Length: 259
Image (cartoon, rainbow, N blue to C red; front, side, top):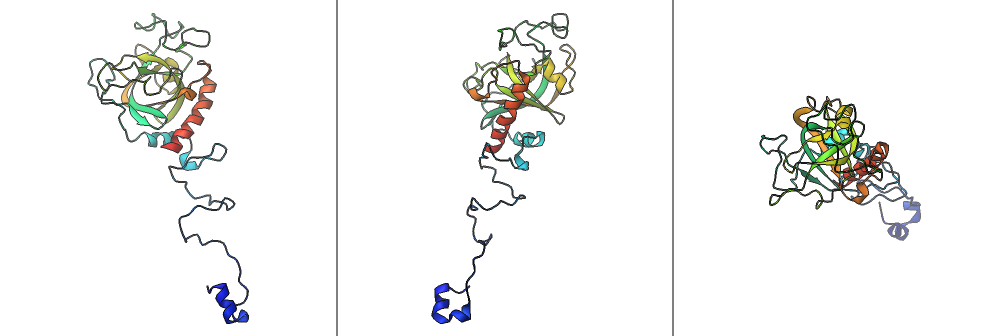
C-alpha cells in the first residue's frame, strides 16, 4: 500500500481515502493486543503462567493424561536410588519437578495408625498403632478411611534425598496414578530410608488395588506417586479428604503450568 502522505503529494483522487485494517497475523510473533480475542484453537506456550482467574487451556488441564505426560522424564533429585522391597536392588529414583517430586514404584499397603476392622495386628503382622502425621485431634491417621502416601525417611547416605530439605512437609497433598485412575491424598507416614512405594489401605482401595495389608498391594513398578512442595501444599485438617482434593487440583494446575 502506498504511504498516505505520498498519496496526498500525487493526487488524493487517485489514491482515495485510506481505511484501517486489522493487524496482519503473519507480520510478527509479537503479543496480541489485550482487547483482541485469542483463537480458541491456539495453544499457549508451555512456559506461560496461567492467570488464576482465567480458563486453563485444555492441553494443560488437570487430567490423568497430562499429569502422566509430565512424569515421563526423570531428573533425579539425588544420586541415591531406592528398592521397592527389602532384598531387591535399588532401582527407583525420586524425580524433580518445579513444585513437586514424583517417583514410579510398586504399591505396598500401609495399614498403620488407628486400629480398625481393616487395620490391626490381627490383619497385619507388621501393624503399628501410630503414623508420622497425626490428625487434628492428635490421633494417628486412619489408614482404612484416609488416602495417604508414604515417603522414605531422610537418607543417611551421602547425596541421599531428604524430603524435609527438599521442601516436602508432612500433610502435603499427594496424588497417585494407577491403571488410568488418579487418586488424591496426603503425605501421612514415613517409611524406611531405602524403600519406596507404599500407600494407605484407603489409597489402594480407591485405585482398585487389593488393600489387604498381608496379601494385597501391587508388585509392578507402574504406580506413579507425586507429592507437592511448600507450606502452602499442606492441608489444614489432615483427615479432611475433600480439602485435599480441592487444594490438589489447584496445586496440580500450577505444576502443569510451570513445567
